Length: 456
Ligand code: UD1
Ligand code: CA
Image (cartoon, rainbow, N blue to C red):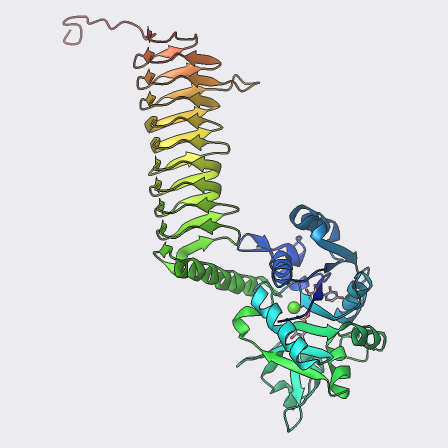
């Protein structure tokens, strides 16, 4: 078991190599800003305090932290980016608890997860070392700090790429950028840091050097797949692919059929129950939740959508902020805009668009319709080409259709309007007055046949 710990996450750097107006740590990976993955890893592993060091683009980062994590994460400001050592100093000053271990993580290593943080702390607790460092073996270690060891394997320190001699550059064991330090030791060591290096910065890696001088460093070796840093957008894309693979595999192992791991685009906060089928090239975003027995067919894109048991989303269903009930069928080519609700056993077919509309139990709109700002009862049949004319150019109005009504094809319902229970709207009607329950409304012009006219 690992002891209680606190975490400081460094996220103040500019990220010049991203070439972006967006602060580096705000770039999303699997739908979450990079830094948020690391915060979740720390909280998930049991950190009882998390401090995020912000600087570059801080207003944007601070606001995101508040909206996502509220009081669970505090931000502190590093006014000038004088190096990772300085950032840790600022972060440590922001901590309330000064006992035990401080775990330091970087905001630009989004694949870091909870088990990795726990492993650091387990080694810290078991070894009692002043410093615990996560390391990895790489065939191409370029760009990373190298772990220097003596002949017996004892850690001597960490050398940054820019400060390394040719023989040091040949070292393939790298510093992943995840540490656990004894709090008291860390404070003393930070005060002794110097800028005598190629970049003229304060390096947190030199804190490890100081622990090495006291023969008090432990290392945890870890798979590089979990610790790759993002310094440019090529590395961002690599992380995105790795994260996508990780998420898809996790669901596949938990009983979800993922037809094609490589094209299952599932964001970090999506939940999927066992016995769901996800066909190729499906995008599940935000807080989408899919219940058991549902099937999401090719090319569907769902953002913050709840899909209940047994629903079948045929190919190219595009939906956001909506709720799809049990055994509902949608598509192919259906579009649910925000606040659409499809109750159990209802159905929308190809080229049906819904917005802020409730479709009652067992009701159907099978072809080519626009249903906006509607309240539709149970067992209603909406014919092909029906339009809810909800917008008068200034305001939106509601169309209400009561239970068991039948709307003939190619009808326009001009809102506000109410179609009563069991009423029938004749095909091709333009309806701008309420239709009483049980009535037939028909507004199209009467057909006239002029005999022989065409031949003449
Ligand atoms: C760092 C490590 C390197 C390691 C690598 C792993 C140091 C000196 N080097 O190098 O050994 O192999 O990460 O990915 O630590 N930051 C601040 N304030 C600053 C400077 C940086 O908050 O003044 C933040 C950055 O926003 C970033 C993190 O610290 O999230 C790491 O900084 P970065 O400049 O990316 O360090 P690397 O060169 O990648
Ligand atoms: Ca980096």
